[in-house]
Amino acid sequence: MTGTSVLHQSLFLAQKEDSSKHPQLTIIRLKEQECLSFLKRCNNMDQFKQVHAQLLKWGLFSNSFAATNLVATCALSDWGSMDYACSIFRQIDDPVACQGYSV
Image 1: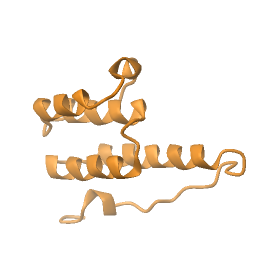
Image 2: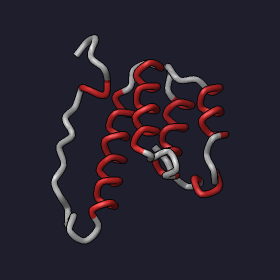
Image 3: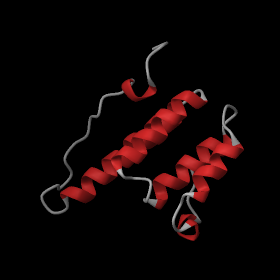
């Protein structure tokens, strides 16, 4: 899919898992999974920034799991930037809550 945005490379396919009990939690979890899927497919910083923007748009940046994976991907990828990862980390409200998560 050369030339295609990483955000458009997959369809948002998800089954409704007991959405009647906790629909908001289900939506957040599905968006987290989609974001992680996008992060794993990033091949450069431009694609990463698209995923970062989508995560902010969805309001998942305050979620420590999503924020931690965002920082780790940026910091540890061959194409990543430690400076950019640090700037993301500084925006996390409670970085202590992010300990123990891994990509």
